[in-house]
Length: 324
Image 1 (tube, one colour):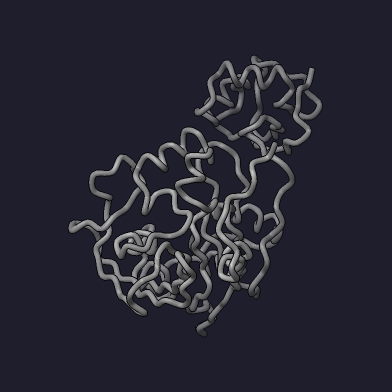
Image 2: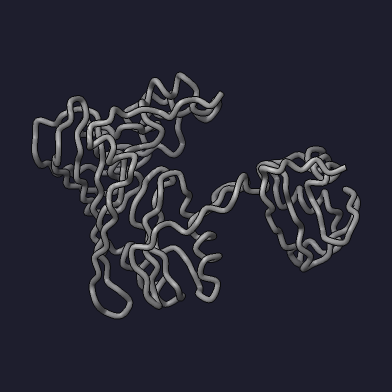
């Protein structure tokens, strides 16, 4: 009997050529190796894996080109597909949106999550949509997508060669004793850290430079403009930590390793909430200037996100209440 959770959406998975003739449970185990075969068999038994018009068992064989309908938590979306984020600019080559915090630019890992590129492809099915660059999941603001392969190659090369000029607004802990500061410090793997993805100032890292300007001082917080001259991973977050003014809400930088590791294991429990004071790192891509594929230069702007603007307007940073 089907035990499908009505809050779970449906994910369509097309059977690849190399899956033709495989047992259903074997095919799923190869496609989603994070799940045990026994767990996948339970999903099939509970009606969370379907092929229209067929009664399925774990031993059923699948055929190249068939579409599996998945309604299992983790493999399928929870809730409705988010709408395309607000469009800042669009023409026949580019689609520029104001990405909200919490939205992946591109899907990562095995666990299903809606991502900007997939949402945009669904919204613009006639175009060859792809990302020109990516913002971190927690970072809000300007994200550029392209509508054809030539435009994509053009813009990816522009980002790689640092032709694109980027400006971010950040809310940080503390009140700098400077109005403007340029941090020039190489970035590489963080030294003496248990977190694999953590970057840090490292003499053996790649050259990196970021210019900062204080826009407003707000009691124990400050609004900072950040203009990275290079494009290293987590550059603004690393350089702000190095300068002694880490981002509000950051779970990695300005924190001991155990805060992030605890979050991985336990989610946003009281320990994490107390350590971070805010549900996401307070970084927003507010302006971007790039060479358009048509040969002109274009500048785009995205107003500060609602959650960060509220803090600038005087609201204390806080996590949302825990649901009962």
